[in-house]
Amino acid sequence: MSPNAAPQGPVGVFGGTFNPVHYGHLRSALELVEHLQLSQLRLMPCAVPPHRGEPECAAEHRAAMVELAVAGEPSLACDRRELMRPGKSYSVLSLEEIRGELGSGRGLCLVMGCDALLGITDWHRWQELLDLAHIVVIARPGWTFPASGEVADWLQAHRLDDRRELHRRACGSILVEELRPLAISSTEIRDMLAAGRSPRYLVPEPVLDYIHTHSLYG
Ligand code: ATP
Image (cartoon, rainbow, N blue to C red):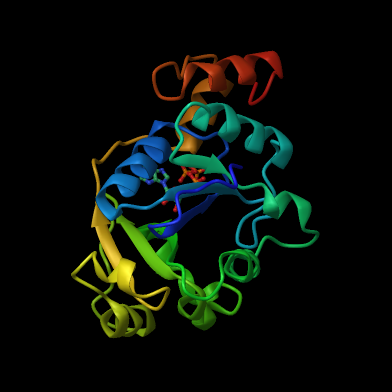
């Protein structure tokens, strides 16, 4: 990860299993950098997912693929911190570490898809997330937000309409961003590979080469 992120804008952190990383993740990441004027967006592979079974593909491979995918794009980076930390990869722990590194005044945005937002109340110490960062939710086709309940109330209490607020405050707001929809999922890529079909043009070429070299998802 580059420690030389431009100092001005907020830093974004995009967590996921990235099993494997694909153009849906990467295009969304780049659009977020541009829309929100982030100084950097870090893709942070989860080592031990708290809410799903541990992926068969080792975290080391998943992180290596993220690194290959972002190489050459200075606004994107891979953050490997969850691979270094034992135990479940709780986002709140990563945000605490990053907040400690950035200091209290710098904008920090945790990026998630709206599928992740819907399950947020199951996250470890979820109510502390906004004390550490803003949350940026990617609106994905086919997903809608609940009209009532705990998540709806939370969204309503903290939702922003003005992106500029992310630059004025270090944490505390939720922004929903509509990005170019790309109907790509890691599940589909794994299924294609398992069936002997090619996911070419859905993942970057160096990622595909890595998958073949290491005989992943076969
Ligand atoms: P899987 O199919 O294994 O569940 P995935 O493709 O959803 O994987 P994850 O690594 O689980 O990828 O996702 C990390 C984050 O990226 C999630 O918050 C998810 O909502 C988001 N995401 C995944 N695919 C896309 C896409 N095509 N466009 C925008 N966001 C995406």
